[in-house]
Image (cartoon, rainbow, N blue to C red; front, side, top):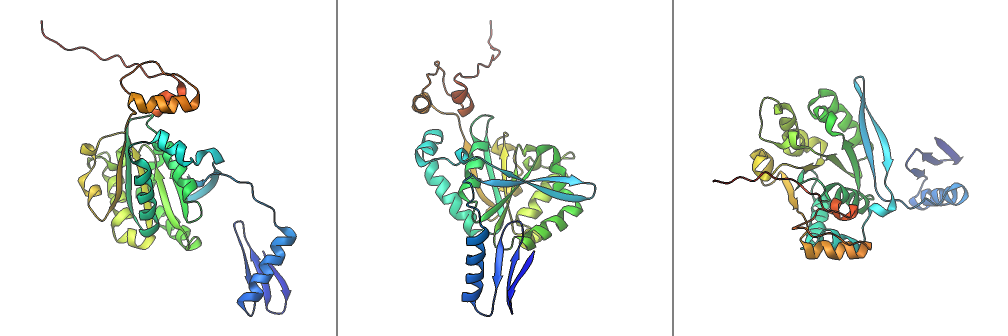
Length: 278
């Protein structure tokens, strides 16, 4: 919507922002301030947010998903869940995401080790400067579809002041060594993260995976393309006990623990077959 407040005095409003126009910067700022004072609503504090991408026929749409304030961890909460220097790594990672226009980040770890929780925290930490998009694992083939390029070009034009970050959860198929069943996904990831297409679209891509580094296509790990590769491990008993104590729970004895097991209050018991010789 466009409002006129006099000769050469306008205000333009869309879903996410308002912009004032006047003969001087001071007049434009005054228009925005007066409009906000009269009609603005104090926003409710939330965590981060992301755009859920879905395909409708030959078109791609975004649905905004807002996260709760509890997804942004305090320093104490972060150090309890991710000990052993993870806070220092997180600070360095955030600096790289501010400084790099494009690139690939790989968060590796077995299920339950806190990869998704960390991504939610990252969304909250960077919500002022980065715009996040989420592609469900079942729709990973979107990456290689020609129509997808036009979608990203449009998003880049509409959000020119923000970094665009694509979240690929459980993206093992898109990062494992190329074979007949994942050739297109890996090639698309290579082009979007550091190819000529990546230079144009300026996308940062964050993948969470359950496979190990040995199974990742080596081209994705090339210096210059890779922003970070972080392994999320299971917690040692002493680390798990500190976290459980902060939650007011007590854990049964085990050799190590995942975050999911700690929050559930019990370790996962896995029956392993014994191999020996008689």
